[in-house]
Amino acid sequence: MTTTWRRGKAAVGRLLDNAPPKTRTAHESTSCFPYEITEMIVAYLTHDLDALKACSLTCRSWYTVAVSHIHHTLILGRKTPEKPRDKLKILSKLQERGLMPLVKEIRVSARYSWYPLSAPGAFSHNCLRYYSAFTNVQTLRLDHLDISSFAPAIGRYFEHFSPTLRSIALWNPRCTSRQLSHFLSLFSNLDDIYIRRIYTYALEMSAPDTALVPHSPPKLRGQLTLHSFFWPETWTDLINLCGGLHFRHVDLFKVADCAPILLNACAQTVETIRFHVPYIREYGIGRRSGVGLPMDQN
Amino acid sequence: MGTFSTVTSSVFSELVVVLWEHGIACLPSDVTLFETLRAMNEIKPFRLVFLVEVAGLYQEEGRRELKQALDLVTGKGFLDFLESPPDILIDARTPWF
Image (cartoon, rainbow over all chains, first blue to last red; front, top):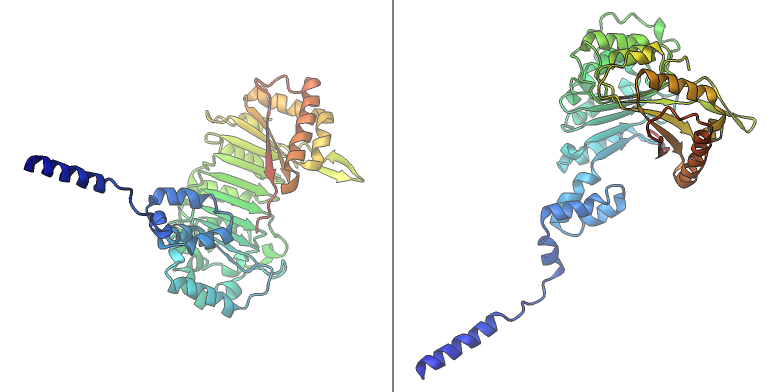
């Protein structure tokens, strides 16, 4: 009888142990998500900054995932006027909070098209110490960069990006052909180049830039996009420096004599060639101006 | 054509023709473009892609118009040198900054 009693007591105990658990709180539920699942969820929101900010406020684990997307791209100098003091405030806040290593892309835009981005304006000594704290920047997009104003000491302002920089986009840079090839040679890990439009007036009359010594051959194994670019000398300089070019994807539009040089240089590595057919609309009717192929004059 | 013949890459596979939306209507009558593409394909065969850059809201309309234009082009035999029909890509035109 004692044995029967003990068996019954054990059976009751097992029943009590198998009772359903109490409901978890929302905090406990989210903290139980594997990190990879949270990453996948937040990855759908990378183009929605407001949603990312809201995610970062929910709990620590979601903050950890969202914050890298929130601070992925730093944009400086858009349409609204920006005093140098305000720019420094943004950079010092980023540094105080340890967020600078999260920045993977920097976009610097001139306020007005006739005020180029030049050394004194955008890269003062105070700004420079902050820029050198960006240790993971992979992409630079620079609008109206006045490369000629930085020469010949341009390395001082941009060299620290060299270990991680993979892609550079220049819109309306002001420079000579030699200054441009020298600037590009600063970045030994550079794969992608995007250049649209080049200012050429008056710059050829500046002091000769024979003192510009190329740094090191960039890799240039990714994409080349050139629109309205007319200096074959830039590419012959880089070809001589790199022993050839290795772009896999080439996108050319209005590049005149550069096209044969570039296609020859990438002949063994190119996978896709993209060219633009320059149809124009005149009096409401479309017509083509030139064939638009890279081997023609367009 | 001499420049194109220097492309010796064994991985070269694709030629992309980029248009803006107002150029689509010109395609069916652009005999010179297709003759040039035919000559290029004889030198080195490739897969042909037509890409239209349009403002974001008009992507579906751009795709439809390009498809109609390419149907006309195919009907005229301008693309009979290709091993497979050309692909269509629509790209939203975005500002650089």
